[in-house]
Image (cartoon, rainbow, N blue to C red; front, side):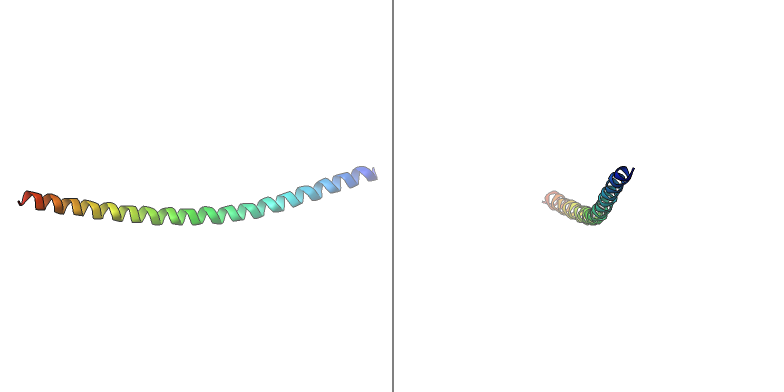
Length: 68
């Protein structure tokens, strides 16, 4: 009985250690996901701005070509 209890205790300690490690890894991943979301949002805004700028330039070129 004593041996079984020690084996169970070791398994429980191992489980708790793994749980703690997984929680820490999960926190790191959550922060990384948030950072990537922010970066993605920033890139989306920059892309929208670039598209608007290109469309404006295309419009000016079209108008300049029509005026010739």
